Image (cartoon, rainbow, N blue to C red; front, top):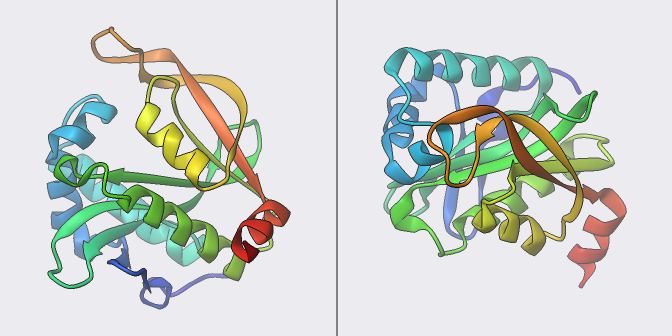
Length: 193
């Protein structure tokens, strides 16, 4: 994948405007990190410094690798809904193309995570030659696992990494995560239906 202009990677969905996360959007990303429904899955609200570093890293990811995360805004009102998108990560002992999402708590159960996930898969298929796409979450995150299944992704395996353990306070080094995957051929079949 060649370098990408983050602005050129902006997308719209039926309800959302997806803007690549860059340093210019650090205030909105910080606001998102303060949401209790998001902070709970990341071991607490993130600091301004952490958020600024994350925004800069996401901008570099868009520029150097053509993939990164978006902030998701309501397409009509402009209200911040969440974030998500495609990125490159090392999860299965190799570089993988991964999709993810995080939606503000007051917007849960309205299909926004699925909409962000679908836009992510479409973007990957339009701009990369990646055959396999993964998504992962703590095994007890039933909401995100349901989104993965709605996207046609299938359970692949369990891995251990820093994260949350159900019923235990704080981030643990050896939390159980469920990894789901999607093959390009399966995505094409789902689009044809």
